[in-house]
Image (cartoon, rainbow over all chains, first blue to last red):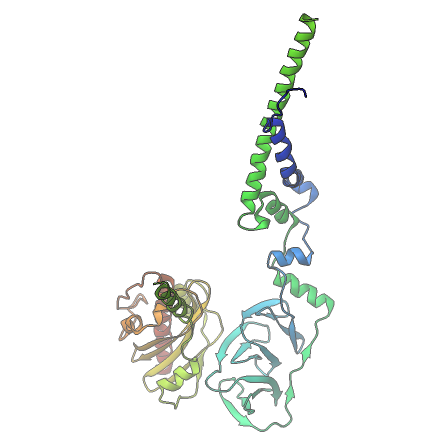
Length: 258
Length: 173
């Protein structure tokens, strides 16, 4: 037995504990900080993230599948409630997409209880609710260059050339719109449009550095890491100073008491 | 006491969740206005000048190249959309002789401000018309907590009156 009492909560002990806890966050802070200091050299603002996981985390990855219909040389797609004319967003909808046709004067898009009219250049002309006039639309087709809809009754209606008035017709010689699949190039362009300008590496690093990437409390976590860094620097200084004083005492003792 | 608080919260919650939605299908509104015999819909394609006037009222371009309306004698009916805060509010208007006969909020998609659907608000528009500055000649009281919805419906009322004026002017000339 030496008779020495162990010091339970010395600065060194806490220096070690806090250092171990904060190590991951401090590494993140340091690496992202260094990278952000060289944004231009590393071209962080020109590089876009392609990871589905990260894009999904930022809400930039579509959740549903794209549903597309060809309308002449263009294609209409609905992806996560957003309606696209080729890759250009034209409207939003909460309804199921039932098809699209190119009529003589306009392009007609059919949803459960709504028709959306576009010019042949993709400009929005009008949105026409149909909930009272027809039962739910099932599909849309074309006859004599005029749009025809099939309702859940089932009944078949053909529009006039201005798409203002509808007459009941029989189900004969109607070319129903058919779903199409976008090729890889078109899908890439569409996704770029869906995500807007995309997610830059700089944005991700900034959010990692500030902690915002972890949500509302993320900033507090990074604040804690910063406080831990402050503590580590002061406790480190304290430990160093303490040891130096002890060594001085030891040297003094050896010099004068032997 | 606990049960009472629970029921109170449940009632409050259910009234909040039921507040928005489709109150009346736009085509059902038109059918009702014209006693189930609506006239054939007509359209107005706003020209540059009219687009500018509408933009002046709304503060942005109206979405859509044409606007449908229904007309019978001196009455015109319009179904128009305008965003309150984030989502469009669909409102039906009936104009008779240049004055508002009826306003009805048909579809409300936002989470707040649905109070504009109530008659105590929409009745304020009765008989309102446009003055020379394309402002309403009636004062419309605000509803606290629904300011943006009140503004949206008021702007649409001005647009409906303007469109009615233009349609009548076109027919007279």
